[in-house]
Image (cartoon, rainbow over all chains, first blue to last red; front, side):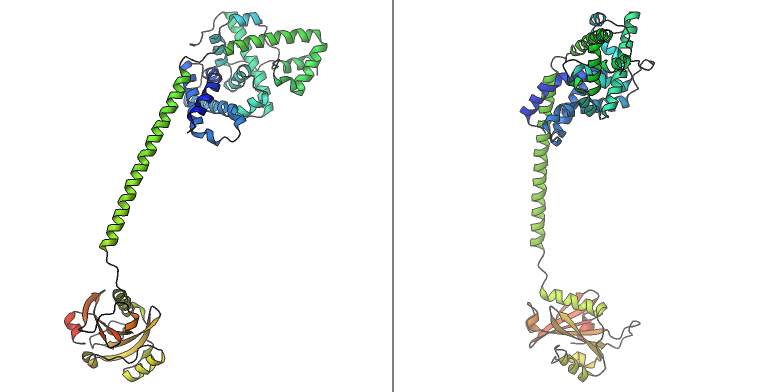
Length: 174
Length: 252
């Protein structure tokens, strides 16, 4: 078990970004809280195995993502929209239109993005993680991260454009 | 790199991060700096990404999440500590019980005497483990042979054994000392392959720490034989035969 003071410092530093990542992946507050707590519980029992203290952030995000994938495997797959392959030419959606959306609508759109693209997109927006850090967290090659980001960002903006046009997007319960 | 390729790369570009260190991104940015249309596209793409980033960063953890994580950890630590304490206590009690049991067993079990061990080992030799070194029905060659082997040869046979037929002898070992084994026949039918059914072991008294004092033979059942042990002069004698005490006494 980690030392109490050290553990509290770690929680204070990382619980909010971890929760944001969890929320982006899971889409519900309850699941995001569970994932965040589970991540710290795993840290408490296995964190001492981490030799390089500079890797704590990557370690925590990796664990949370793994826990999310494990929980997702135990559930019915979340339905998502079938989209055509992302095109590099993003849909015409203005920054102002995006600003009028609320966070729940953006997260609801992210939930419809192909599952494999959700985590890189969330890390891209949330953490300013470098491409290499995203690759480390998701345990995939750097080139895979770049291609998944291109497709994931494209899908997200396509979905947002579609929702803005249709004027319908059930908000998530934040 | 053309404009379309640059757009594909720049859609994942975030100003103020390390993205610009990516060689492809750097090349696309350089192209945008020279291409007015691409530059306008980039400005709008960046604004769009910033707007989306702002939405993601508005995600706020519910109140009390941090405190809940910390309190659950503290509870887990306390639980683990209790489990450790309990485990230590149980282990301590088990260790004490084991020590007490061991001590009790040690106290209750008398140490096996040298004589008892000797008697048991010689009975086992009689029943299963010896080979006759010299086969003869005459006693004189036995003594000669035993003397040559530095085994006790100046033994005194009890009166009862004078009537038994000697069949041979062997030399056994007891803690490095030679033990004389003289084999006899009682005259009863022998099992197939056997030539003897009465055995006398003789060892120097100094070789047994708890040799019995001179006196009447002590009888004891060992394995499926009955034995008589006695000390005479500087020798300890052990006579073994199948049967009961009355049978054995006829050879003493």
